Length: 214
Length: 178
Image (cartoon, rainbow over all chains, first blue to last red; front, side):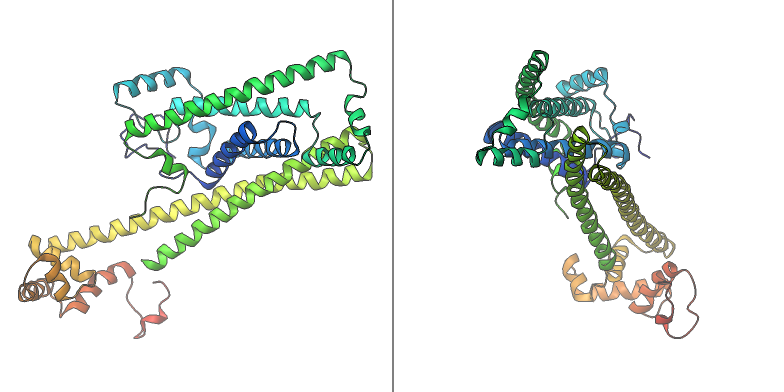
């Protein structure tokens, strides 16, 4: 088993030339879903809720994969370590970086920040919709469209002021953290570009289809 | 080598298909879990809820076992990849050592290696930028140093090492160990 924290050169410890399909599918699925929900569809719409649920599913799958997956995909291969991340960033500035068999410490922190933000956005979104599945949202919308407004009443039925304040807080959190996600994404793209240059290795290819075949 | 590569290729396709299936399965499971939780808040004693909860639990288990199976497939593929690389390395080590034992000159080693790869005299001559007569002479010297009658026996010398055991009968097809 490869140990993530060896001082060895690129031959002994280097990030995978190609991540496994689950890592890649969850990565690009979540990236596309975040961009879609942030920029293209309308908050509260059926599509927005459905895409939110897809993000939740992909996030959960990645969490399962972080325990059951191959070595380099497991949390154990890239524990969150802010000190190591700072050290790595210093090395990045000096241009001499160490190689890791999974995410480098800075990249690992970025991954955990992403996951925390995604979980927060998902949970606050669930609070805002009262945990309604996309199927229920669709049914409610269809009922309202056909003139039966009881679905709207059921939504607010029995809600106290405390619940109301809670809902508003969830909405606030949802918006702020969604924007934070976009900032993280920009930082992530910049980080990948910097690392690829410092390591002289195409990190994007490892997340797509791997290095060009000989 | 082509067949080994084909097996790896189909293994990779299987891995990709399993992964896509796992993602779709997870999507379905999460939606179902959401539905069950909604039912739980409405009427936890109904047969509908109990039945759906059991089905959903099976789905969750399916995702976990699917993830396990996929991990195993990935690890198996990596082991095969590595075994293939080791076998390639081992064969070239064997060839290298044998060439050394026969005291081939560097030029003869190059020519011998190309001959082992199945190139004919004209192709070897073109690759090395030498005359065909030179290559033919080099090959003759290689065969005589190796004590073999010609190209077929020269190649067989190394294949024999790989097979590891003598052929029991006249028909080599009867030996499935290859």
